[in-house]
Length: 327
View 1 (cartoon, rainbow, N blue to C red):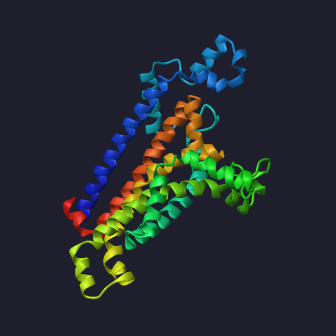
View 2 (view 1 turned 180 degrees about the vertical axis):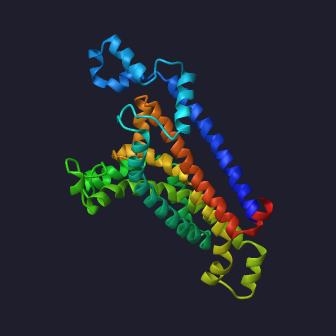
View 3 (view 1 turned 60 degrees about the horizontal axis):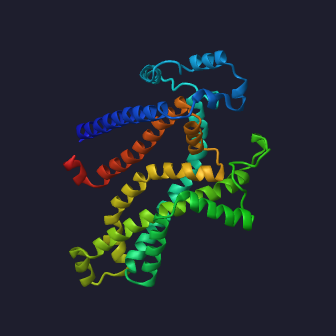
């Protein structure tokens, strides 16, 4: 059993490493062929005051004067030594930028992940238990509508409703503008994170609710549930004994596999609300040609998504012994 687990982890890590290399190569290729001039994006509005000699020195300092393949190899060697490089737009190490920005994004994605998982599961179970009723139809309509709703559009709608019209929440940012970091209260942070987290939660509920509903319907139509009904079991007792246990694993898979969708959604939500997280840094790195930061975020996001899938696989192996036999 221990040897099987080690083999399983080794193969997973090997796949992760190959995926990271492929993603970094693709990201590097796309950015290197982008029409965005990294030197111009680095200098900004003062570009007209920069002489050609200064421009060459800037390009030489960042290694932009070398061929793309040489830049990629140099960056790869630095990564193997634990150095992700220096961000061109933030003027600080990429690892520090990712660490600082991810702390803000982690709170946002964590809240959204928990809320969407909890309410999505409850809604899916409720719809399946009342199949064909108005409750089921309402939940399906709600979920299908949300599944086709763009995250940025929903964020703008919530921003317009709760911030502009009602004035219940602040308009964007992670903390109040013009307030020193040591003066920011816990209430300030919560009030600024509610709308972005609510946006991600509402969108994330749809897939979990629909998937849980369908799985529970399949379970309730199985032979052993029909036999349990014949013995007199019904309602919550039937659901607890035969339903929840059989839909727990699929629900876990969907929840942890949603890390990729959660990260992609946070990029749009952070842009709409000007929330200073990793998603906003990703957009800035792409628009301003900050190659070291963009590649660092690509590595980190791939590791983030891989971690979610790995946790789901490990839980599968622990809960269901049949997975170990197949593996």
